[in-house]
Length: 86
Image (tube, rainbow, N blue to C red; front, side):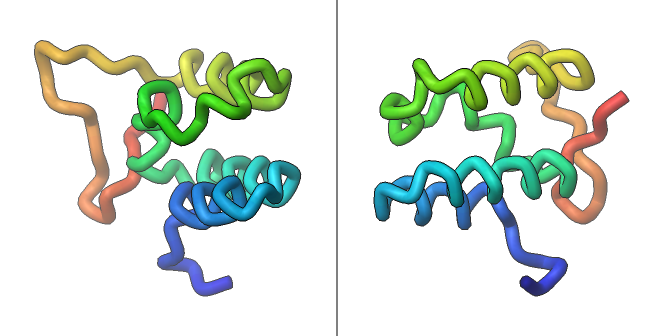
């Protein structure tokens, strides 16, 4: 896949097709890519079908360890649109 692909969006497509395993594989790639779209993982409505999946919860925990959203300040993004994680 091309390096500029946002794997978060690819995960959404897989999820819409009912391909949960492929969706989680794409989410793992999005996590490694530090996709800025991962900020929507907890609040986007199309993830409701996987809320009880342990992979979803584990991914949220990993994201939370390196990144937190504060609505009082902008989400830290790099120039390429990816999240700045510590």
